[in-house]
Image 1 (cartoon, rainbow, N blue to C red):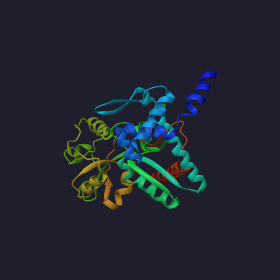
Image 2 (cartoon, one colour):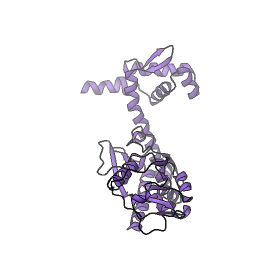
Image 3 (cartoon, rainbow, N blue to C red):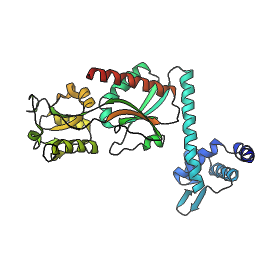
Image 4 (cartoon, one colour):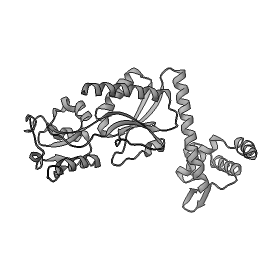
Length: 319
């Protein structure tokens, strides 16, 4: 153990520079020292010296050179995998310093599915930006076609707000359930079904359905129709875009399935109405998902607290 500590101090700790590690990551990203130098606005010799310094400190070759360009060796891949974590933590540290020194400032990066951006998250971000005008919110779309948390794992975002299966658990992820968000059968107020007090699924089989390319929605419809001895409805329009679904529903011609939160935030503007149809599926909750064992900046903590307040009020109004 003493030798390992000594090696760190003499061979690694004093010689491995963050600047050189950053240069290595840029070289790997661009596949060329010349392109990396241009991107970094420096000379190719500076880039070469940085790579040589790292290789000397570590005692291994970091790049394979060929006529097709430069590729990382297994040693560079291992180093950069940990290096991304280092840079990510440093960014969070800078954000925390900015927040501590300037009250509430900094950036937060959030991923959410499009259906949450169509209502709940827009409401949350609007209120948050009014309360904390110096915090910048970067909101990107999360892929919900599969249970994919790559954006978090690659540290492209600070947190995700998304639907998760009931009792979902992962060794690397911290899941904070906010509320249940059941699916409803929805039509526009111009639809002949909108004014009925009772509607059976059998009556809707031949209606033009808008069905999103979602495994969750397809499973809900399959279970609901097959429970009554019916085939699931045929797809008339397939789209995940909430805006397109709202436009089509407003015409009165179509029916679809929407999360309750989407209907709540869009019903009045688009003249939408939930039909009195019971779907059998147990709702999958909406949750905040973030990496375990990763400290969050004060700005992110403020947003999480704000989102909990918004969703608590939303859940209370549903009861």
